[in-house]
Length: 345
Image 1: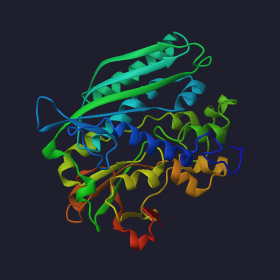
Image 2: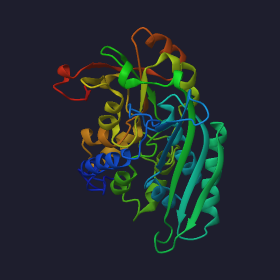
Image 3: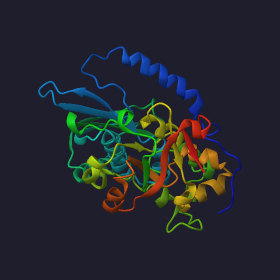
Image 4: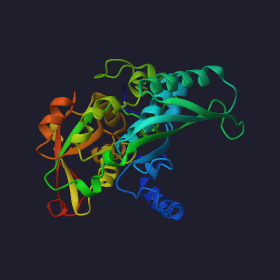
């Protein structure tokens, strides 16, 4: 496959992570003003929690997200079922970081017109992923918004609610210690992040036929690799939940933004780059766009969808019980990393 552009960054593709950071912080401050004593304090989770009104020992946990501009890749390929799986599994993983199991799910589809193929294929993906997670879809909204969405465009958002007993709640900010072990769990592909950069690298919007090409190193087409569904970690992590101290879902912002969310102040994550081989898909993206390696690690999961943190004593048992996991690195003092929260070397 010929290289189409060089030196592309996420910012040039339209996503400015640096500009988004202060907005997110301001939003956290604003919504925090609505919190009462029943709301779970921000303790490094990827979801929010509140006391159950009927059971003081149970927390209700919720999260929401979208599949982002991955919809544009699906539109170019004419395949939509994987998007439903994407959004369910992304949301399941987010509440899983608290120790919660899913209870129910709702979806929102905003679309330009009543396109049966797109809507029903997405719904089939939602159904399949929710059945796998033993999670009911109890409602949703399909909004037809011509003039808001351009011809052929649509948006997909998911909302999930789960529960966790307070005695089973993970508390990474309080329990993670220097010397703890980081374990990596493999991703199934790009998951639901970095699609804007990918579209720019391969010029997908203008040349959708590129999705039918078979780049060297991939087992199938580029489109198949990009539309592989976001992996759910529910079944693999649930059996070892009691043996870990926390976990980080590697989504938007890559390692640099997601790992620090679970670390206590003064601690950092040190990753051993030689401990895993980056999947071919990311090498294809990097080569086609001339993307700097640091940018790749900031935007994509690079083959690691979830990072588990456990004590050195429990690490061997977790590794033995978790198919595909490997020792990725360790928790160290920030004094050993020159103040950096994440170091990959």
